[in-house]
Image 1 (cartoon, rainbow over the protein chains, first blue to last red):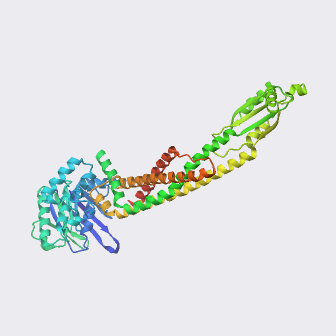
Image 2 (image 1 turned 180 degrees about the vertical axis):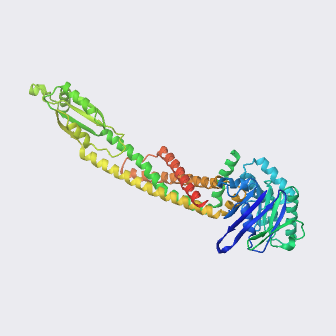
Image 3 (image 1 turned 90 degrees about the vertical axis):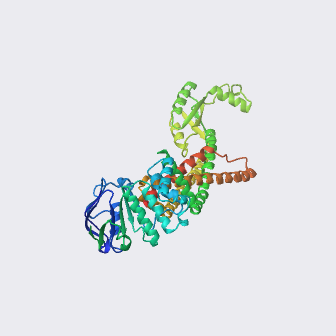
Length: 216
Length: 289
């Protein structure tokens, strides 16, 4: 489903990703580990095609980085759920509106949006927060909302970039458990983390990134 | 589709509200500047109406040689009518000239002189719907070239003065209009740029969840259009106030009143909305890659 074929993507000062080749299967749960600045975020950005390889290609579902057209990128991103360390929630919209955003973008009907958002809110047990604004939520709650926004569009994969980076251990554990729960329902998850202790005993595959070199 | 469209329109309105301070400042500045344009436009339109009335009063008197008959003069009148800018040319026969003489001086020429020495003539009127400067001289020159035309009498100096003032006014108003319009476009462009900058979190979030460029850009363009519309309506209100005040002072010196013209007002609003759309579209294209 996701295939990195000899991918090199460099930035100034020599940082980046070099000759990365690996594959992530449909429904798989993969941790991307490595120290800060190793290239984990670069790897995830390549998946949702915010950046493109200098060499090699990234294939996500039917989209190939070397052939994809600019107008196809939004279509790819509708199939990919994203969760970030900084949550990336809109502060002037409440929880319901934040979660509804990907569905609005897809042009879904109001009734469908309402039903899907409440379904996800129930699933993640945050229905009581629907009318709250991000500033009224704790870090853990914000990340759950961010997760809800990622899964509401029923993606094929969730990319989580250090989702527990700003959370306390209890919230981190909860987020990880939720990601595993989502994965069990068939959605692939790629989670980048440098917190090895949190993820070491979860029984999932590791992709290690050190100085831009990937060992899958 | 319709739902998305309505959502994007609503987002445009919400954007206005979210950036209310900068938007209000920009709308107010545009409205003040534009009110002069509306005032100029409406006064100009009124002035055009007066000019039209004045032009309908312009006339030439063409005198033919006393040696030619009325029927020959009539053929010459037909030639005059064909000249560009001439609206009508009415023949005054020798007999009619004598009658006019008798009406004005109370004397019958036949009784005095036993003959009618007055020539045939014609009264020429001009087309008052000329958009630009009306110049009587080319018409006069063409008439003078017609055989048997002995004299052309007209108020050349007065016509020239009226036309010169009208032309000057028209040029100044057009110049101010262009300058203010450009300034308005820059203001709207800048407001949208600031809005884009302050909404960068939203733009990023939208792009990450799969929004197309059109989806991201549309609310900003709606915002620009609404801004233009509100500014135009405000400018119209200000101009209406100026006109009321001007009429109050004009009443002291003259019977002339500037007439409010709704057609000019709505044309102006439409133009403003169009230019606002262009300005916001340019801003969005430049700053929202």
